[in-house]
Image (cartoon, rainbow, N blue to C red; front, side, top):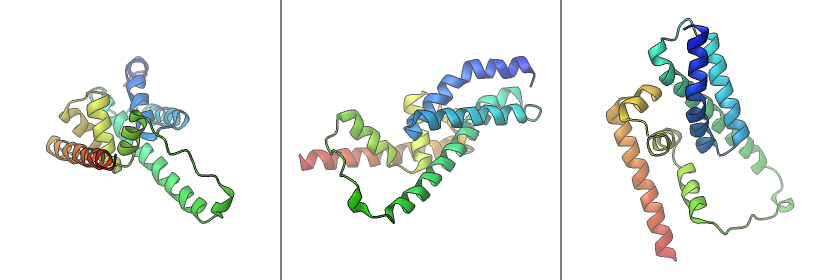
Amino acid sequence: MTNAEYNHSVEHLSDSLYRFAVQFLKDSEEAQDVVQDAFEKLWLNREKVEREKVKSWLFTCAHNGMLNQVYRKKRQIKHLDSLDKSDFQQPDRTFESKQVVDLMVSSLPPLQKSILLLRDLEGYTYEEIGDMLSISSAQVKVYLFRARIKIKKQLKGIFELA
């Protein structure tokens, strides 16, 4: 990959990579870090990465980086859970519709969440998502179906409570 091809990749893929990361992580600064790390890794591996596979390579790298962020947060939460909770106030429990859907999407397993965001938010094909996440397009369809069913069940449960 030449410098011009790398710059072209940055110009054309950074926005969609950032949208994917910010939807997954729900934190713009962490999403920026993930995107920057992915492009840095691409630069360091520019001799190894084929020009046709740059998009898949970047999304795979970002996906792995986001999973690392999620696991890091879980460890921090476990540590915080061990602290005395009487010092903290309870958050406001009123939600808007978008917040409810975002909460449900964020509760999905990481792979299902990535597939749902890539397909429904970014509009990638099953084959493209499969290449990005190193799974078959059939697996992409199955995980997407399961994610949508899980969200549907959660929404149905909320409406039954109301």
